[in-house]
Length: 160
Ligand code: FES
Ligand code: FES
Image (cartoon, rainbow, N blue to C red; front, top):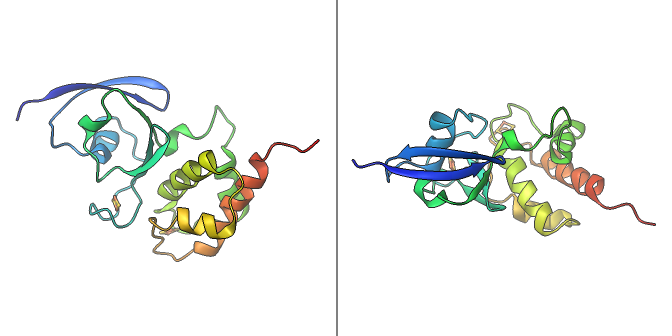
């Protein structure tokens, strides 16, 4: 199959790749770019383990073709922390014990990032709705929701 050259900004860095038109974004990230923090749990758009941000919108990368990201920005879990400083969403998962086996965690954190970018002060119900496309087979939902609310509180600008 003919390959096509695409240029994608991944976690702030420009990456160029030769890809088959049928290649899924999840496979480009994991196998093409070595970003294995993006997990694959179902390959059928059900579990959300593969969630990444494309132009700051949460998408399931097993449901998007790599060629569709040509000229766009992709953020994966590897792009959350800055130097040695965790992102508040990552801190929230640590503080509130928001993970057990950790398989769903990257996707959960990406969906949480997308939520907090468009709604910095969500209610618990809004957090639950935003994460409703992400499944946790360990059923750790209570602490995951607490983790996102913890992050929202931390990211809130100080009141003067
Ligand atoms: Fe993409 Fe499950 S691997 S939704
Ligand atoms: Fe195990 Fe969510 S922590 S799947």
